[in-house]
Image 1 (cartoon, rainbow, N blue to C red):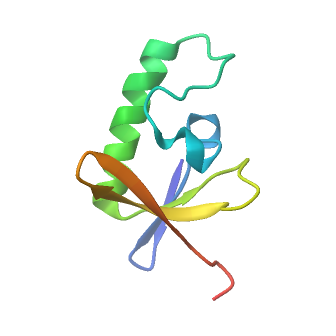
Image 2: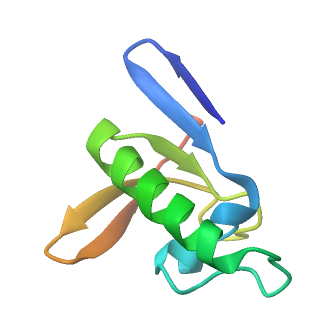
Image 3: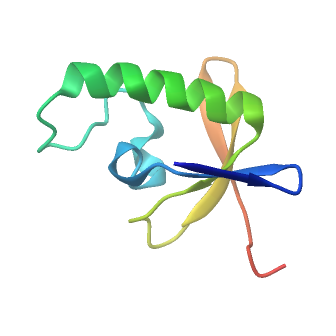
Length: 85
């Protein structure tokens, strides 16, 4: 789900990316019933979020709950976002 306003997009991707560690394409939740479909969905969402500069919510990450994603070569890196500012 995405919310857009004020020139920014917030993406809550639930269990597609529960933590920042799940950014790597093969990292899919173990209980996923359709991992191949999830992999393709994840590939599409990651690409879109990088291009849009979306603020991504990692619903289960205790250390970095919110970040933006950036493409660096063939890797996607994160930049933590402080929502209190």
